[in-house]
Image (cartoon, rainbow, N blue to C red; front, side):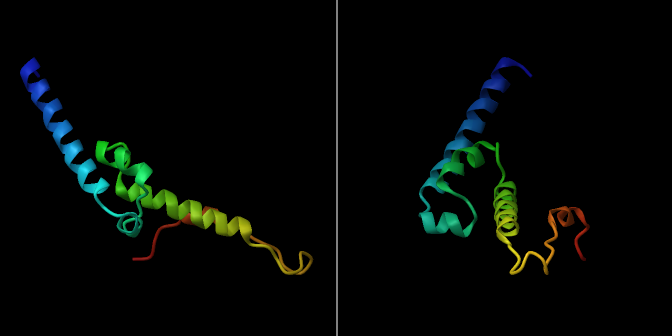
Length: 94
């Protein structure tokens, strides 16, 4: 790639970043929450460092792990808890 082509690509990438950043920044907190994004993630998503799918997946996994960690048996002698985090690696049903 020559210098002019690289420069044009940088300018184009920056314009795409600014457009995505501006559009996402204009959304209300409620609308961002609906799509699973927090305001602190807008820059990373607009720059391509973080995809919307990855952002949502990370939040769901963290929430599920927190739920699992908070499960406590009624009587520790009668109920044995099982760590089910390894189940996320099983293939999904079609």
